[in-house]
Length: 408
Picture 1 (tube, rainbow, N blue to C red):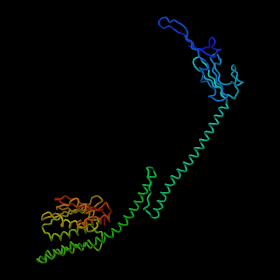
Picture 2 (picture 1 turned 180 degrees about the horizontal axis):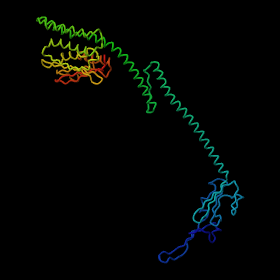
Picture 3 (picture 1 turned 180 degrees about the vertical axis):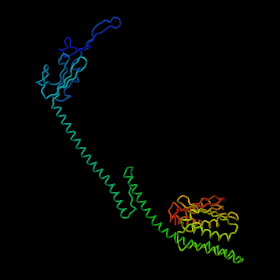
Picture 4 (picture 1 turned 135 degrees about the vertical axis):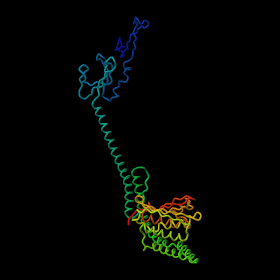
């Protein structure tokens, strides 16, 4: 294949594509049978060669392999010479080889066009920078107000906390850091308010518990039953038993009063429980069996007084199963705690009954003495201590009293 101007192509501004035609029927001996000539107008072949696409004053032209210009678009500058290829400094020359015949596509671009385009780019960059500055200024102001508004909320709440108003809260929606800070600040206000209320109510409850304990020390029900038993013994002339019961009652109340002290030693608490059991043994005789299992390691420690007697009395009043009852009183030291247990083999307590006792909702039937002991222990030692009840109907009940091991 070859592009060439043959015959009258040059006069007619046309060009021909020449190609040999070969007979391939006999692959051993190929035979040339003629030529194929495709003739086209140069203008149509290079229709896309338009200088106006680059800019006014520019020139595009195509040279063949012999240096002849095949087509030119635009007017060449006067100082340009094809042979010498000299060009003044006002133009930029760009050339590129096109196709296998090694034709050249040459572009002469005035520097003024490049400078104008560069100026347009510069102005565009300046305009974009100005727009970005304005947008960023507005965005910065908006972000600043956005964060300042939320920070002012935090400052207002903190000032309210400092002035003692712990009810103020921050309403904030979202999942960002401000939301976490608002949640933590609200929780802190709630915790501080709760702690203040707890301290206030604990002080009140402690004073009330002290009064209730002094009142509970003289148990009217226990005193009434004991006096009834004394009257019955006097009526039947059982003077020895009468004397023992009176002495036991006197000993019990002497230990109960204890000069108004709230904290007593463990031996004193066990002695008071023993005095109560001795009185009840006079009343019930062989039907009552009480066993004390005491760890001597607990002897140097203190306890809140009157924590065993209410549970022994409760067992004697409500736990009878038949005509006999066995009660076991255990006192031991486990780690940093003192554990007291009152275990009976009575009728047991239902789980709902146990919940009613500690909830305190049933003011008539629920065990006031049990709840009173639990509250007094929690007030003195903290909420992690107190009374727990394990019971099964028809088998018995085990009451556990846990207090910290504090030496005298």
